[in-house]
Length: 178
Image 1 (cartoon, rainbow, N blue to C red):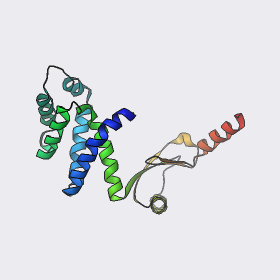
Image 2: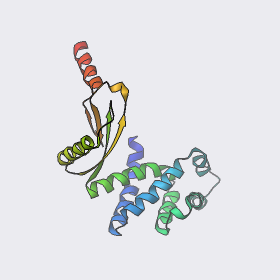
Image 3: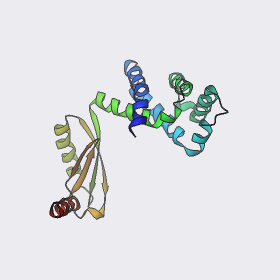
């Protein structure tokens, strides 16, 4: 949703720049992931949106649930979000933060879906080729989807490479119907 992304971007950028300057990107990513998961919980989401709670109470509640997973700086960040009525943005803030971190570290997570289990050598070769093409360090996750018939479907951020037989058949059908 573009609106959430627009609202979350300045907070994600501020958190990223702070963490980068303090050389704590991984630590902040973990803390934001925890806070985002807690904030996304339906039960807690209802409590955090309770109009009878002050911003300080909402922030304290979220931080208490997160427990020791949050350090003082992350707790302050959550207090700022609560004060601006932006706690609901935590999942989107984390997503944007993770993107900024990956761009900074020149890494990308790649999902490879295939019709059959890929051999380790094939997965490693694919990671090498994609790493050169994307000019990034590639982390490959594989899964199997028997509905593909054959070939692979590769997702790397916004890039989708559909080399599956099902994808090719769908393109052929669309071309024949136009």
